[in-house]
Image (cartoon, rainbow, N blue to C red; front, side, top):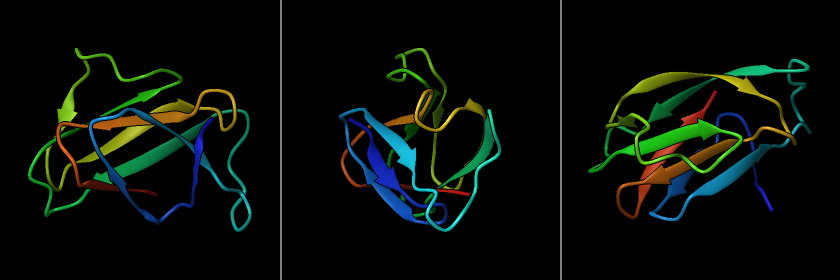
Length: 95
């Protein structure tokens, strides 16, 4: 089951892959697909991997502190954003 989150909310991730469902209470997402901007926190000591619709494969690019990445193809509730950190306490924000 996906973890609910809001756009602009800082999310803390560890070494267990997590699927994120964006709460549409205060925002309407573009249908059918959404392009998201994800920013890794400047204080991160490790990296974070992202993917759409599946657990991030080990070959996916890992993003370090302060990195910004555009993620295409998110279909909220069907192809959700997934993330996994290289260590505990890694943070990122979805815009």
